[in-house]
Length: 146
Image (cartoon, rainbow, N blue to C red; front, side, top):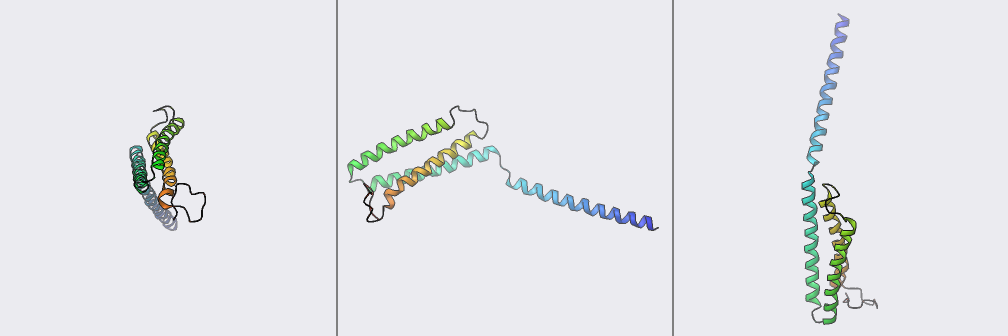
C-alpha cells in the first residue's frame, strides 16, 4: 500500500510539473507573438518614419525661406546648399547600398532608416537658423541672434 501511495504522489508531482511547464511555455509563446513583426511591417514602419522626418525637414526649410526672405543672398545660398545636400544624401545612400536588391528582405527598412538618420542630421543643421545663436557669438554669420 505504501509503495502505491508513493507512486501516486510521484505521478501527481509529475502532472503538476507538466502543467506548470505547459502554462509557462504558453505564456512565452504568447509573449513572443505579441512582439513579432513581419518584415513588410518593419519596412512600412521605417518608410513612415523617414517620410515623417522628410516632412519635418521640408517644413523647417520653408520656415527658413519665409523668415529670411529679405536676405536675398542668404536665400540664394541656402537653396543651393539644400540642393547639394539632397545630392550628397542620395550619393551617401548609393555608397551605403550600391546594388539595389542585393541586401535581402530588410533592405527597404535599412535604406529608409539610413535616409531618416541623414535627414534628422540635416534637420539639426537647419534648425539653427530658426532657433538662433546666443547673443554675443561673433561667429553667427547669417544666423539670427536669440
